[in-house]
Image 1 (cartoon, rainbow, N blue to C red):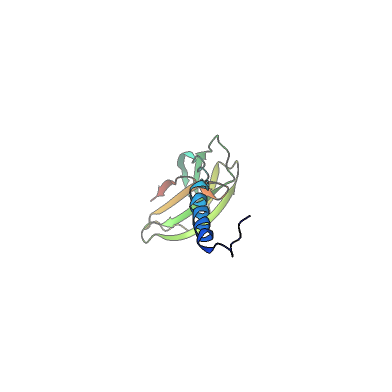
Image 2: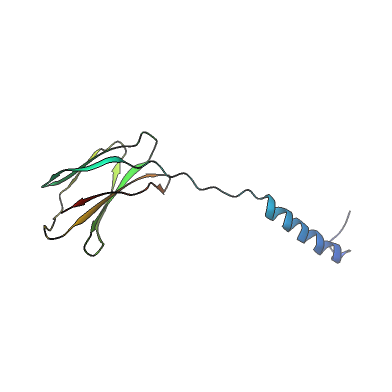
Length: 121
Protein backbone atom coordinates (compact mmCIF):
# COMPACT_ATOMS: atom_id res chain seq x y z
CA UNK A 1 0.00 0.00 0.00
CA UNK A 2 1.27 3.45 -0.83
CA UNK A 3 1.27 6.26 1.66
CA UNK A 4 1.04 9.96 0.90
CA UNK A 5 3.85 10.68 3.35
CA UNK A 6 6.33 8.13 2.00
CA UNK A 7 6.27 9.11 -1.66
CA UNK A 8 5.28 12.78 -2.01
CA UNK A 9 6.22 13.01 -5.70
CA UNK A 10 3.94 10.14 -6.63
CA UNK A 11 1.18 11.40 -4.33
CA UNK A 12 1.00 14.75 -6.07
CA UNK A 13 0.88 12.97 -9.43
CA UNK A 14 -1.91 10.68 -8.21
CA UNK A 15 -3.93 13.59 -6.86
CA UNK A 16 -3.57 15.49 -10.14
CA UNK A 17 -4.47 12.37 -12.11
CA UNK A 18 -7.58 11.78 -9.97
CA UNK A 19 -8.64 15.40 -10.40
CA UNK A 20 -8.25 15.10 -14.17
CA UNK A 21 -10.25 11.86 -14.26
CA UNK A 22 -13.02 13.35 -12.09
CA UNK A 23 -13.15 16.48 -14.21
CA UNK A 24 -14.02 14.49 -17.34
CA UNK A 25 -16.28 11.90 -15.71
CA UNK A 26 -18.70 14.19 -13.89
CA UNK A 27 -21.99 14.19 -15.77
CA UNK A 28 -23.26 17.72 -16.40
CA UNK A 29 -26.62 18.56 -14.87
CA UNK A 30 -29.13 19.40 -17.57
CA UNK A 31 -31.68 22.11 -17.05
CA UNK A 32 -35.34 21.23 -17.00
CA UNK A 33 -37.28 21.79 -20.19
CA UNK A 34 -39.49 24.86 -20.31
CA UNK A 35 -43.22 24.14 -20.24
CA UNK A 36 -45.33 24.87 -23.28
CA UNK A 37 -46.83 28.39 -23.30
CA UNK A 38 -50.48 29.34 -23.35
CA UNK A 39 -51.94 29.80 -26.83
CA UNK A 40 -54.78 31.77 -28.38
CA UNK A 41 -54.20 34.67 -25.95
CA UNK A 42 -56.68 37.47 -26.69
CA UNK A 43 -58.69 40.31 -25.16
CA UNK A 44 -62.40 39.57 -24.80
CA UNK A 45 -63.30 42.89 -23.16
CA UNK A 46 -61.58 46.19 -22.38
CA UNK A 47 -63.91 47.40 -19.60
CA UNK A 48 -63.08 45.63 -17.37
CA UNK A 49 -60.09 44.13 -19.12
CA UNK A 50 -60.79 40.45 -19.70
CA UNK A 51 -58.25 38.13 -21.29
CA UNK A 52 -58.82 34.54 -22.40
CA UNK A 53 -56.44 31.81 -23.62
CA UNK A 54 -55.98 28.11 -24.16
CA UNK A 55 -53.82 26.22 -21.66
CA UNK A 56 -51.09 23.87 -22.90
CA UNK A 57 -51.84 20.16 -22.97
CA UNK A 58 -48.49 19.44 -21.31
CA UNK A 59 -48.09 19.69 -17.52
CA UNK A 60 -47.38 22.96 -15.72
CA UNK A 61 -47.71 24.25 -12.13
CA UNK A 62 -49.30 27.68 -12.58
CA UNK A 63 -49.56 30.68 -14.92
CA UNK A 64 -47.75 33.93 -14.16
CA UNK A 65 -49.33 37.18 -15.39
CA UNK A 66 -47.42 40.44 -15.43
CA UNK A 67 -48.97 43.77 -16.37
CA UNK A 68 -46.49 46.35 -17.64
CA UNK A 69 -47.03 50.01 -18.39
CA UNK A 70 -45.56 49.85 -21.90
CA UNK A 71 -44.76 53.58 -21.94
CA UNK A 72 -42.06 53.29 -19.28
CA UNK A 73 -41.89 49.46 -18.84
CA UNK A 74 -42.89 49.70 -15.19
CA UNK A 75 -44.44 46.57 -13.72
CA UNK A 76 -47.93 47.48 -12.55
CA UNK A 77 -48.71 44.13 -10.98
CA UNK A 78 -47.86 40.43 -11.04
CA UNK A 79 -50.20 37.54 -10.27
CA UNK A 80 -50.03 33.75 -10.20
CA UNK A 81 -53.08 31.95 -11.55
CA UNK A 82 -54.02 28.44 -10.55
CA UNK A 83 -53.63 25.57 -12.96
CA UNK A 84 -56.64 25.19 -15.23
CA UNK A 85 -57.55 28.89 -15.28
CA UNK A 86 -58.42 30.15 -18.79
CA UNK A 87 -59.86 33.60 -18.07
CA UNK A 88 -58.35 36.65 -16.34
CA UNK A 89 -60.07 39.84 -15.21
CA UNK A 90 -58.06 42.98 -14.48
CA UNK A 91 -60.03 45.25 -12.17
CA UNK A 92 -57.17 47.71 -11.63
CA UNK A 93 -57.20 51.19 -13.11
CA UNK A 94 -56.28 51.49 -16.76
CA UNK A 95 -55.27 54.89 -18.13
CA UNK A 96 -56.71 55.30 -21.63
CA UNK A 97 -53.66 57.41 -22.58
CA UNK A 98 -51.24 54.57 -21.84
CA UNK A 99 -50.53 51.25 -23.45
CA UNK A 100 -50.22 48.08 -21.35
CA UNK A 101 -48.64 44.69 -21.96
CA UNK A 102 -50.12 41.63 -20.33
CA UNK A 103 -47.44 38.94 -20.31
CA UNK A 104 -48.41 35.32 -19.66
CA UNK A 105 -46.02 32.46 -18.87
CA UNK A 106 -46.64 28.93 -17.68
CA UNK A 107 -44.31 27.70 -14.93
CA UNK A 108 -43.15 24.16 -14.16
CA UNK A 109 -40.69 23.50 -11.32
CA UNK A 110 -39.47 27.11 -11.42
CA UNK A 111 -38.85 27.05 -15.21
CA UNK A 112 -40.80 29.60 -17.28
CA UNK A 113 -42.26 29.15 -20.76
CA UNK A 114 -41.74 31.69 -23.49
CA UNK A 115 -43.70 34.89 -23.01
CA UNK A 116 -47.05 35.38 -24.65
CA UNK A 117 -48.24 39.01 -24.80
CA UNK A 118 -51.44 40.85 -25.42
CA UNK A 119 -51.46 44.66 -25.74
CA UNK A 120 -54.19 46.98 -24.46
CA UNK A 121 -54.73 50.51 -25.96
